[in-house]
Length: 238
Image (tube, rainbow, N blue to C red; front, top):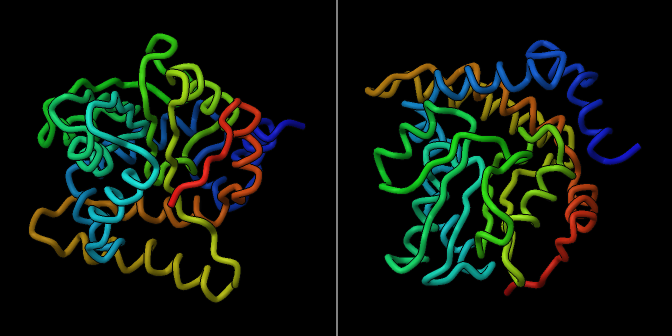
């Protein structure tokens, strides 16, 4: 069984995700609806989750992984543009930014921040020609991808020679106690604080789902294996 097949099987059988959907098509419908509903309050909830550290951390990770002035950047699962904003600062006016996401609600929020080309699509089917970009980024969305092998094959296809992929993700804690703390914070504390904020948008369901996807996430080594199968060799960064 390939990693992608195993991933798709996990989506259907993991008891933590069964309350949300039972098939890949249903997963796409359900998650798109959740992201659309939470789009207006997403940034505030994310800021609470990251305790205000998100912006500088994203920019630093992109910089250390080789994103430079003048590059063409494709930000996959761009959401409201939290990674894209930092990427835009690094590539500057001589670069080009493309933001891809399946949620029209999230992309609408992104366009309030950035005047860039947006693409409504999934990571597994990127509507761009071969060798079109220098750098592909994805921030904290790999858990929502149904087919890792297909997504990474698409990344490889749209990259130019010597292009780079940068994936930021939350790993599942090793200890049961740490898992419990993380789940309670993301699934309980953050939604409560976000709902009490002046610009109230209900992110409760989405953040509860976030907590479940972290618990059900694929471990790092199989992800690296999938990247290698797609032709993306791991590089060392400072």
